[in-house]
Image 1 (cartoon, rainbow, N blue to C red):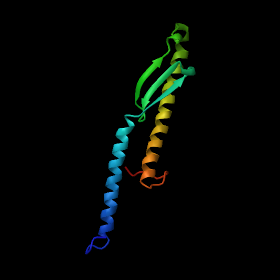
Image 2: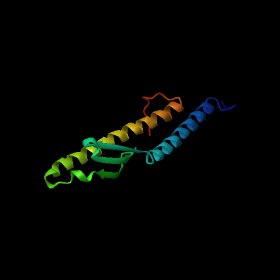
Image 3: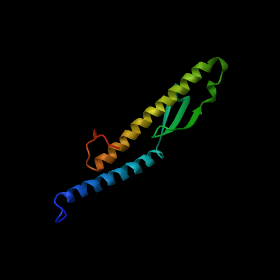
Image 4: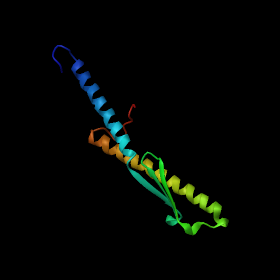
Length: 114
């Protein structure tokens, strides 16, 4: 506590902790753009790569599936791979958030106000 200011010293510490937490959140969000996950479907015939924020960055399609009569199957496989990549991105993002909050002594189920 700061002498002569009563509980304002505690408030100052809380404000500093909130600012530190917000800075770490920004840093983590930036880090999520560098982490990638790959979803796949059709036993690996279609692969979609995304950042941990869910931004699709690459799509790899095995040439063996390119037959005109399989158009709908290919479309379904692409959608499934993208959805798998997005799901994996959500999981990776949650894991990174849990690491950060754990290191700060914050419960895993704590919802950030920002």
